[in-house]
Length: 572
Image 1 (cartoon, helix red, strand yellow):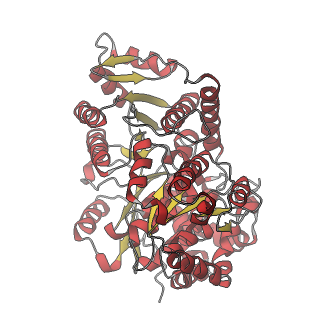
Image 2 (cartoon, rainbow, N blue to C red):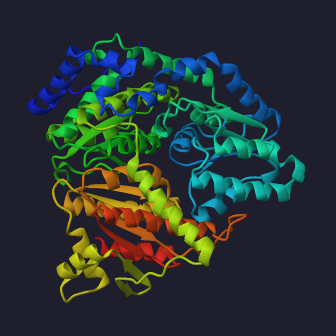
Image 3 (tube, rainbow, N blue to C red):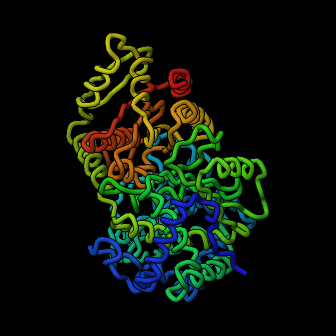
């Protein structure tokens, strides 16, 4: 029997009343059936009806299982030992969940995911695979997204050097919308296969489409079992199911109603075995709802603290893997519940039920977006950042350099940068003690009740760097009693970056950049991957400044380890 409920019976009376009112509204006004019919008036009456193809994708995939089975067999029979997914955002986060949750499957290629322009990270992936026996999956809905295109250029060039030049295309497949630029690239490059996306499904809602299921099949997952399990959740969320019994609608009512009461920091607490699900949920929630000064701010991988370090802007969502209960996690959440924090518990029977969560949360996000009052399917501020980054890379192609920058302060090899408005604010707050420590202190002292800190790290995403940054975020959380977020660039630009720029103006941002110790060329371009990453960081910062966000950039130089150690000391 499918367990579908989200338990919120222990909410305080005002919070429970708001959720119950939202559910009553959805029931009385037939909003569940209107959702399934594609009624755009549930949101802003813009183009939302054009982006609801995900509602029926599981049924479509079950009807075309042979195509996925063939993909799995072809990859195994070709003798590939590795598969590398080249993507970004909606095309990479779901495959990453599969890789980290399921690991390598016997007799199938080991899946790797590349969604970073950081040269060290690209090189790390390259060094883990045997180029002559690796299948590359280039995933891009539009076919115009910068990162997958230059990833393809880089690895296609490498494979041409490692194998017979005329056979390079046999090691590449594409997942892209019909008629896209990527389809043209794949056809010209004689890729061994092209899997179509669904134009009516946006990237972050595409987990159950080919963007998620082709990599799952290639790495050897039982996609029939996965999709049949998922279909149970689809049925539980159907148009005929009453709102109060509909698992997706109930969760969406909780998220939307509590956000409207100021509890918009959705703190994700997942069992270790499914912990990477939070990275996928970050994009779904932030990019869907964070716009027009409204929205949900997902908080992932923030370790649970004592009840006294939290304000009244949180809702805690536990995703508990039933066969791997974490007693310490349960105890900490129970302490938060007793302290009056809203805690929602969702049980996940086993890892093959992740598809159920994909669908539940997609429904919930659409419902929450309706309650908050935004278009849950566009991402206007992501596009703004892309435009600036593209202008900078084009400038580099013309001149061979990025525009010069003047630091606000330089001390001990660390440089601080910000825009004119924030520079004036920080200088005023710092007074005569204009040092690195003082500027960082006054920047973080801007955090107040209801605010959040976001660390935006344009450095290699690895365990060592994440541990240092986690130390910083928890030190700030405990001292300032605010929510904290951590994202590695440029991947967060296609995820939480939308909410940071378009959502509520309650963020204080610390962008972290570095000089790349080793850089890598982008074939057929003057710019390198390091230049692209630098342009993306600058584009990100410029749009944050244009949105009047409180942002400071810390440039660590080439010694990232030493820079992070010093930053840890300064942020305590």
